[in-house]
Amino acid sequence: MTSSALSETATLDAAALRADFPILQQEVNGQPLVYLDSAATSQKPRQVLQAEYDFLTRSNAAVHRGAHTLAAEATDLFEDARATVARFVGARPEQLVWTSGATLGLNLVAYAISNATTGRGAPASARFALAPGDEILTTETEHHANLIPWQELAARTGAVLRHIPVRDDGTLDLDAAGGLVGERTRILAFSHVSNVLGIVNPVSELVDLARSVGALTVMDACQSAPHLRLDLPALGVDLAVFSGHKMLGPYGIGGLYGRSEVLEALPPFLTGGSMITTVTLDDAGYLPPPQRFEAGTQPIGPAIGLAAAVRYLDDVGLAAVHAHEARLAARMRDGLVGVPGIRLLGDAPGAERVGLWAFEVAGVHAHDAGQFLDAQGIAVRVGHHCAAPLHRRFGMTASVRASAALYNTEADVDAFLDAVSGIRDYFGANA
Image (cartoon, rainbow, N blue to C red):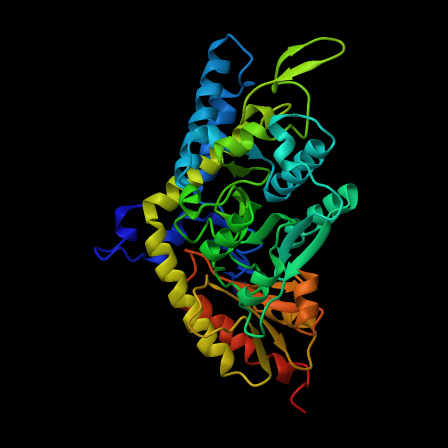
């Protein structure tokens, strides 16, 4: 990326940025690729691809365990990547645990709490132990990755799972939430941004509710980390997860942020090499965080690639990214509401949001709509987007989701809207 990609007013020139993304230069089905599926996975700039390649061809070695030069170089690169990504979310390096992604991060927390319930890590971990009748609170908008681990934790411990409802406009019903939070509430897990609705949830209000009863807060930041400037300590959450592949980074890498006192008290989930102090045939001692939660061989190349991704986002500027994507979201919304038979989800007036919209096409299944768009080179997501309960709440089984990123242009949005306007005619749904 060159400085010409940015203007003096901190706006960004998406057309210039696209040169950094090799995949966007191709045609699909004989049409220029319009990639509007970044909420599922983002495309990767050359800088990320090069960072991983350079590591693998120049410094590839196991970290934290070798005395030779390559091992020292690899360890330095790996821990520098941790520091870089931690700074990106406002954290200190020791507050960032590497995971394979958000799903593993959330399961790590749920299983660590389960282990605490059995007495592992006591007395420090006793604060997390659950008893039958304790309550785990999530929201009706959650991705399955921030729902099913809590279902399983409830099943293992006898805790009760409860849910904050969503209003018809897609916003959380905070009045109902206030009535759900009580002295038995032990965990409040929620998404920063819904991957279906695109709405930024009210973190401060949710954190305040949890704090009022001493509950642990766990936030899914997958859909906010690529689009909003995050300061996780300032947001006040106890734990948060994000995935590299949604923020211009590689697959197989993500982060679990935790307040230091929380991570230090949690017992480990996965065990093995690289996370121990002393080991006998009968017992073991564990390293402090973050290494306590990083058993086995580390994702060194992906971590280095993710650090390159966040440096890229920093160079562009998250404020410019968010402003650009907000303009695309507004253009997309204005166009979609003008198409007969389109029902938008999460169209809440004045709500802060990221650049994605999910919608239903009357008389046309979402999968058919997606194939129609694909034939014109337009990549969108179809299905329930790993949020089946939310779709059920709105009386549907599937939707079409278009999600923008910093490399999308107004021309992308216009091509998408032009194609959407022809869906119902093509399938005879207007007859």
